[in-house]
Every structure is written in structure tokens, then in C-alpha cells.
Amino acid sequence: MKTLTVALGARSYPIHIGAGLLARGELLAPHLEGRQVMVVSNETVAPLYLDRLRPFLEAYEWDQVVLPDGEQYKTLEYVNRIFDALLAGRFARDATLVALGGGVVGDMAGFAAACYQRGVPFIQVPTTLLAQVDSSVGGKTGVNHPLGKNMIGAFHQPRCVIIDTETLDTLDDRQLRAGVAEVIKYGLLRDAPFFAWLEEHMAALLARDREVLAQAIERSCRNKAEIVAADERERGQRALLNLGHTFGHAIETGLGYGTWLHGEAVAAGLCMAAELSRRLGWLSETEQHRIVALVERAGLPVRPPAALPPQRFLELIAVDKKVRAGRLRLVLLRRIGEAVLTADFGADLLRESIAACLAGGRQ
Image (tube, rainbow, N blue to C red; front, side, top):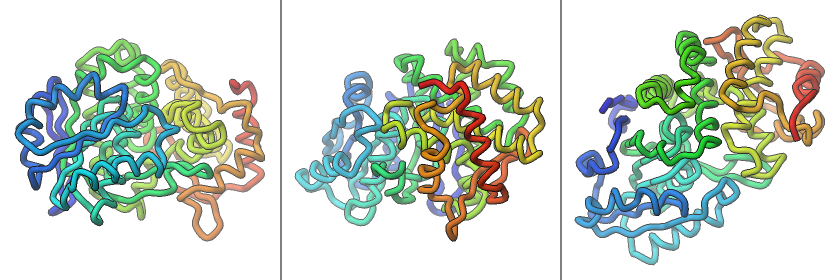
């Protein structure tokens, strides 16, 4: 087992990474304030992994909420099911929520924990690669709105993150590839040696080589933990973690949540950010080709969907949390390993970049 720390003073917490960790109740126990535990999972994950937690949970007063599986259910309506269960069970302020599932479950359980009685503890137990390397770490929680992804939410840090790499054995290939998009992102925004490592090890990563997967997860979590520790509330460098996400969120919102997986949309968004960065004269053509080639080797889309024309794209990205004083800011690349948050681009250049990326885009 490897353990990293998200250093946030009195609210610091560990990230445990290893095989078979779901059966190790001693990792959970120090982070439970009271005797009440509410497990939040979904219809796919609960039948697979809830029983591994059960021997530990039997010593507590515990219950479960099993949600439908899918991004389309990441709404206030379905978060209300968690509140209903907490209230019906008379869960107190020292109750702990445990998020057992992927990014959707983690975001919803975390948001419920942030709101219930103005804040109760929660623990992240991510079971998808995307959640393990990204969404489970950092305390961003929330739900989607028909007009924008993750526009309703709160910062609420978990008490710990427990990453059992064995849960990836049951993850389907499409979901695994979606998680790889977030892994690539870390290499692009601040870790050029990691990007080069991914170029060398992509085949092994997709083949689920256990050692390669463990290394990719640890390196990704280390990068994110360092950024979150330096900028918890996204007032500076944490915004760089949104590389590819403004474009990606537009794809998810425009197509309807769940049509493309989050990681698939981010992958196309990374390539779109690379295109605009090259047109600004920052990113070299060689580096852009390396980025597109790696995303393609990961089996991910390198173009946005043709169903979203440039004007619609511009309308969608205008509804973004990085808009300040009416100006859209994007995370772009100076080079592989160096990202920057900027509004220093013209509307015409942005439109041209989107149009160029759409050429040949899949439906």
C-alpha cells in the first residue's frame, strides 16, 4: 500500500492506494466520528463491492442508498434520495457518508455530506480509474444542471480516500479509457516526464498491467494533491486542473449528460486546447501531434462531435465557472508540462480553432 497526504493543515487527509483495501476496515475506522454510517453507491457497484465493506460496517449503525448508474442521474432530484434516507434514519451530525462508486457517486455523496446539517464527514472509496485519479481527491462536490455541468456544488474535503486497485478488474474498457484521459491531463499541465512515461507505457496501461496502473494512479494523485494543497478553493493554480474541461463540459451539456462519458469529452477537449494553443504560437506542431497521437492511442476521441457547430459550442462554453467579468478564460498550453489560465485569445481565433477541430468530428 502507498499512502499520500493532501496537506491542508488540520483538515489534511490520506490517500491510500493498493490492492484489497476494501477489506481493510482499519483504514476507515479512524475517520468515523460517530456510530452512524451511510453508504452511497449505485446499481452497478453495490452488488460488486458492498459486501467487502459489510464485515466492518456490521459493528456500526449503518444503512445504504443505491442510486441509478449514470451521469444523467447526477441531479438535485437524486441527491434528495440521500437526504431522504439520512432524515428517515435520523442520522446525526456526527454521521459519516461513504461514497462507494465512480465520480458521479463521489460528487453526489460529497455534495450531500456538505449540505446535510450544514456539513457532515464523508469518505471517498472510488471504484473507477477516473474517480481514483481525479474526482475523489480535492473536495469538489456537486451536481449538474440542464444549462451547465457541475454548476451547483460545494467544496467539502473527504476525511480520507481509499483506492482499491482491484476494483478496476470489473471496470469495462470504455470506462477505463475514460479515466486515462484524466491521467494524460496531469502530464500535459505540469508533469512532462509523466507524459513521456505515458507515451512509453500506454499499451500496458490499457492492458491493465497492475504495476503500471498503480504507478499511473499514484503519480496522478500526487500531482493533484500538491495542487489542492497549494490552492484548495481554486483561486489560482488549481484552475489548471480544468485543462480540456471547458470544451469537454460543453460537449457533455450539448449532447445530453451520459451520451459521451466525461473522460471522452475531456479527451476531445484536451485536443481542442492543444489546437488553440498552437494557433496562438505557444505549442509547437510537434507537441500538438504528440498530444493527439497519445489520446488516439488511448482509444479516445480526438475531435468533438460534429453535432455541435461552432456557434453552439461558443454558447455552451460561455456558461462556465471560469468566466470572470464577462470574459471567458481557458486553460491552454505553453508547452507539454506547462499550462496557463488565460483570456488572452480573440473570439475569431477561438471560433476558427473550434471549426478546425470539428472538421472530421464523429457524430
